[in-house]
Image (cartoon, rainbow, N blue to C red; front, side, top):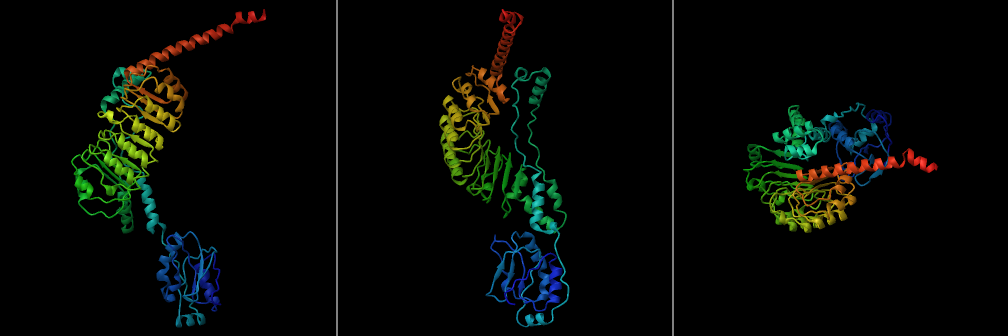
Length: 481
């Protein structure tokens, strides 16, 4: 009966034990196990052990059973013969091989001791526990600056032009004076509580906590940077650590980061060991050290980059944007807004980004973008563009914004503060009425919008009155005559 595959189903351990007691002619070296092909399958044909060690190996085999995706039978009478049958089986363990004298004794007088089932609790499996605690950690998001639904009014008069009622305008101006844009505190209280359950939960909680690193305290960051850290994280955020030195950052080796952010850390620059193909989000607002050479390094090392936040990085020019456009085709978010150095970002860099990436959000506040740059955006990213921040782009005129809106149907936010050369605001009002996007401007722009809306309202009332006169009693009498 060598080489025969026995179909053991349903109750697994109990049925196999009953079968061994009833059928002493079953060959001893029967392996019934489960495994999957990634990593490559482990064949149990070389195991040389006695049946007494079965209970010792049960926990390991149960773990294999839990992880398996493809069930198989494996029967081997010798180390050279292998036979695999693709038939499912709920059997929960593998019967070890018995060779030599043990094989003879088993076939003649099978042992009748029952095989006990030792299935670990799901919360005792490290893989399942890591998933649960990882989900718990995801409920504590990393603090980041949220994108405002509407920017603060510049004055009380500006608020009155934006909001329809005096009460809303006063409340908005009071909120702007309070400066309520505080970033929420980072908390991992739920995961930290898991550290005190037992040793297994402690190890799992440490693995989960080591994946997302957030530091807004200088002392904690220095303690972390001074000690070796061999775990691979996917998030590293440094928040307003203005006294941190570059030497501490250079010590870090995290080649699998997906999110890297140095928020208002003007003296820091990510080292090459932090830039890899896994990086999708890079935010360095307020960095004085980011320049075109660094963007060339980012473009070469991070081809799958999707978010690039370079606000107030005034050393970046069109050359750096061309590097990013050539190597990062998946880019969706780009913000190079600035207060100074606007002449360094022009239509050349914006045109390259529009033609070669999938950008849907563009922040160009304070840049010297002209009408040709807006037409590049409309031509190459028309349906895909969703948000445009053009505050302080003083070169824009009536030859671009009022005309390109028909090519950007999915535009949701349009910021035009200090764009005073745009005087033809009627197409902007009509676009706003069609899709209800958020259009923001300065006091001059909002006043132009308000005056044009009043003029359009008068024209609509006059047109309705004319139609009512045409279809009134006298017109019907004239039709009868």
